[in-house]
Length: 277
Image (cartoon, rainbow, N blue to C red; front, side):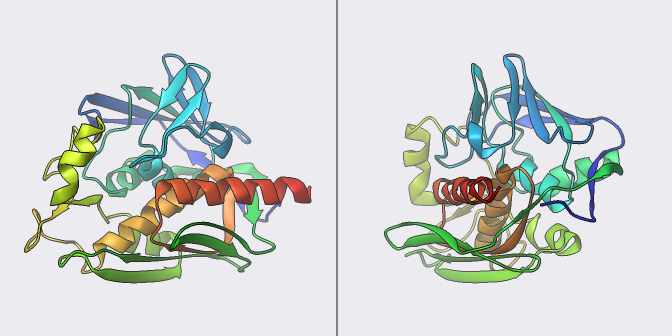
């Protein structure tokens, strides 16, 4: 759907370096301006990967994309930042197997993109309008979308853990709300998950600098919000929904969600919109 809103890119190239959350290896990204209709595209030494649901790969503990021999991991926080700032077109040059973990949130990516400045382009933004309910589920886990005049995201989590428990949050996601209330929420895990995650070859770059660890009676670092865990789930949801390839317009609710469910919903949204054309 076309819109009175215009597509946007960034004004100048910017870059940042760090360590990958899952590989523990050095990583670097550089954001470059891109023209109308480019979309968000990752550029690796093996080729280009559009940030679109058509190129989904692994969704265990993060979202990965693959196109031919080109592959990139842990894209959700950067994509959430770009979506939250309505930056539709950008080339993302990657050095390393995944994106830098930064502080485990989307805030450093928001700050990076804002330092580049935002430039309005000539063509209308592509709006991915939800016109009828769409949902995916796995047991007692659900993610669903319904029509809404705007973009509303809500989440609910329920952990059998004394330091997490049940949390819920949701709001109409404006740019300012995203920057202040969602982007700073960090990745988390429980202390009992660490060995399991690392046995999968993941989480090898995790530290107090980029992950909240919930022990039975404490956290490894102070929380930024009382309900930071569910806010981070909403952050992940926004990043995964951005793979629809446009600005999603609807109300989305994630109950005990995961990257696998989030991206399955995104695939269903893309299918709904393609069938409507």
